[in-house]
Image (cartoon, rainbow over all chains, first blue to last red; front, side, top):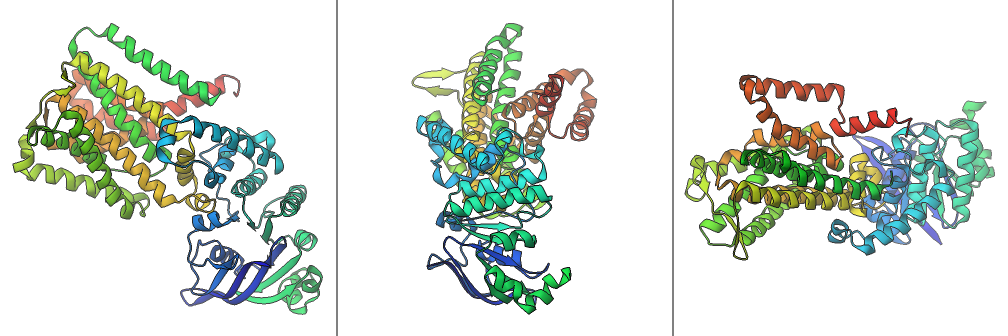
Length: 253
Length: 315
């Protein structure tokens, strides 16, 4: 079953087609990568899928339900979570608190019990803290538990965003360039984290420039150029596609 | 330090200071100043939830304070409400008003939000000034003592203890909220709105919520202030008072409940201390503001804590 379907999706910014008539689907359980040169529309596509932008035309279906036009927090409640290319960390909070915000939808969010600090709230908060500490460990950040997010190195923040997104317990996780700006070792660590996320049953949609990573972990690849679909298929198929080679991989000779 | 010990420890220290401070009071004037300092502190603890934690600005909170005061004044004197009923009803009305105006204006950010809230404050101030038939206009209006269950709160000493209990209670509520799912969502709105949205936080709802909560804090204190003073004028809702409140929060420390409290106390006491050099008071106040922004933009308490941590060997 397709978890996500994108049908004839377009997005215009003042006459420029950032995404044009794009149709594809993501199968449940896959690691589905989206590649393309800079400006191909990958991040715009992410923003359309996750409700940050509304499409100019076309629609997005998540679990066979039309979700285009929904707000990001509504999509989060349906099981869609994401990270950002340019970090969107809560720098005014600790690492563990960042992850705990990710678990927001699964907590008692009523105002009065929070204000009066009722035992039910504090008990679930303690459970949440333990659960989120486990997620920090899962992404390899156990030692940063009580660190201020503002004091953490860039590579750790990338993983912190993944932990926060996982705390929402999504069915589908969208990762926007998780390895951008990381060195080779850090990239490999992210690589491992993504594989572990996928093997835990979460569908992963990945935008990434690191071709070694993309070719190594993807089940399916979608190649974009100028907002249109250039090619689609398994890593081997996409790698062999002459158009992809000339538009993108060609840059490497 | 564990967050739970920091909470109870802080509350205990606050309660102790309030309890022992009167030992140094030589006359009732000290109590009067103490009450005003604590009233301001409660408003600032509420305002800090909005400004310091959720990262939104309001230059109109004196308006909500004044509405609470006038609500109590009008309901008790004209309609014969019991003071506590007037206080609650005024707070409810102010909460509804904040909800109604908060929904559209909290979509704005930064300077635009500042201007919109400034507008609200100015409108409230003008209405209180010009609707003389109901409010007494610029001449102000008088109120009776705060009576409850046949018992009247009167005199600076009694008000001191009432304000003290109210302050400890407010700080307790604020600390509870900050360290809860709701409070984390508020802080996340400050950190990154889109980051909060994608994990399920309805950011506009939380912004409106904290705006309403901070307005209700201001309104309740406004009601208490009106009864304590026995006389109110529209100037308690002036733009200058709004700026004063924001200044207290910024000086003491944004996103620090005890910081906001300390800022309120310092700026309430300062004019008393500077009484000898009265003509320079405004200048000194301005210099303090500039100095704070330049040398410790995070505010007094957070900067102090950071220094102590460094001294303490990086803990």
